[in-house]
Image (cartoon, rainbow, N blue to C red; front, side):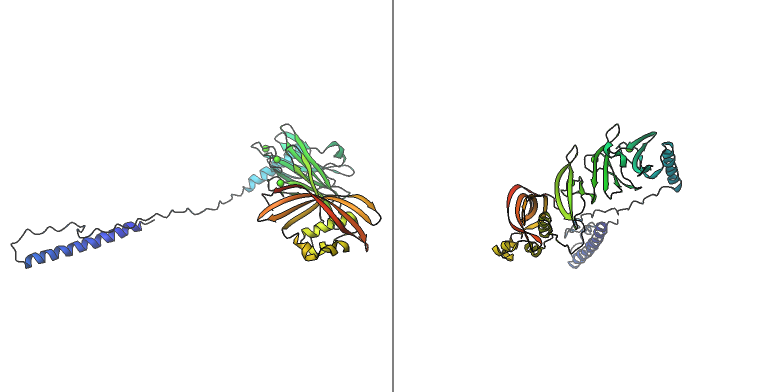
Amino acid sequence: MPDFSLQTRQRHTRRFAHAGHLLCLVAIALALAACLPPSPAPTCPPAAPVTCTPAPPLPCTPVPSIPPTVAPTPMPPEPAAIQATVEAGASSAARAGIQPLCMRQENTDDDPDLEWVGLYLASGEPPRLQGFILDGPNRHDLIPPESEENRGLGEFPTCELEVRDLNADGRTEIAVWGHTQTGATLLHIFVWDGGRYALLGGFEGKGGIRLENRDGDLADEVVVRWKPEGELVWEVIYTWDGARYAWTWDRYAWFYLDRPHAYPDDTPVHALASFYLALNDRDLPMAYRMLSPAARSAQTYEDWALGFATTLRVEVGAVRVVAQEGDRATVAAQVRALDNVDGRVVATVYAVEWQMVHLEESWQLDWGRSELLERWEVRYYP
Ligand SMILES: [Ca+2]
Ligand SMILES: [Ca+2]
Ligand SMILES: [Ca+2]
């Protein structure tokens, strides 16, 4: 980078040297005009003038030069190297007597080397999906629990594999999804325990299985969806507790996300689930319409809706009919609500009990009571 401050200084120096020469000439002229005995010719001042101190150039804070970010150019492996890797994998599978549906290189045991992980279909009626790991000369099988061995990890030739640290404990898991002929989804999660690939969890969901991280702890929760009940589906959330995936919460959800939702009220349980789903959807007029005429006459819509002004999210779970006789039923549930309290997100769990009434071919919420079970501030709100 050129030093601009230096150039400026040189310019100043030249200018002041020039001024010094002028002063010198003026002094000589004055001395001659005074007709004084010639005095020794004045010594011209040095280049730096005495009449003024040149202002030092302004200190210049050097602008740090930012090296341009050079995007790393990914070096694609040579075709020959890819070919060699593929052939090594294929011969490794052949040596192990496996005809894989799919296989890929991953680090499945957290040592420095890559293993081959894949799936194959064992013959049978129905055929069984099996998983394998090829680690150098060693073959390891991904084995489902004995009770499920007759269907393996699935009954269809699928390749739904995920290899990563699912539960944020520092060890890599292998998740294998499968499907049964009855339409259920299976999920089996394995981890290397030093001697074998141990099963951490096996799940079956007639409405599907997915992973989600709701609490921001970097670990995924397993959400198992039961058989859909029309538009509704009951979901059970399993959370890793350090030793296993434990049932932590269940809730009603929409099986399909598209709108408009039809809020079913054909049973006391569905009517209660629909009421809280409507609150969660912020469809407050719909939720209000699910109250019985007696409940609505006790409170105007505006007054009632004010009670949900801070509501961010509502989930209802553990819904069960406690008593039912004729057109009346008592339904108990747990409600988990998130509220915005002065900018902080507060979670509250309530035990609720509703008296339901069957009127005009629909179950309606007549009156209810709730008990606060737990409250905490949420640090993470997705
Ligand atoms: Ca490895
Ligand atoms: Ca892990
Ligand atoms: Ca989580």
